[in-house]
Image 1: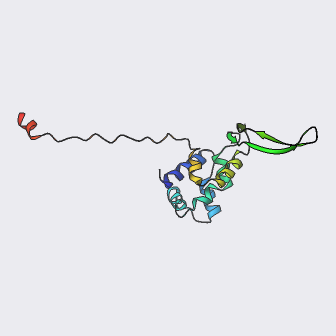
Image 2 (image 1 turned 120 degrees about the vertical axis):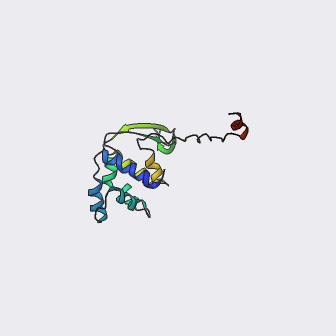
Length: 151
């Protein structure tokens, strides 16, 4: 999938959730509206899409409020004063946490900011069918000269 195709899908999903792409484009970039396709093509060049994917308007529409969030809490250890007054080390195992929040978009923006490839992070949340690899088409062989002679 190309960057342009991915951006089209991202903007499409955000628009389905109420994102006004044209209003954002004109307001934030200060450029005249060239049309949906041309606007996305412009964003896909020279990493201009960062302005889109890190904007709060896009994030609030892309990740709807109240959507369930699943994330992994890592293993941690810390020191703590125990009941008998000594300092002890507490170890906690990692676990999966699920919760519903109104500001789920803020969590995802933070995760997006620390990810090495932001578009790959966003790709995980697209609601599209997985890409299928098609088998190469069967080659049609030409009939041998002997087969032609039999007819």
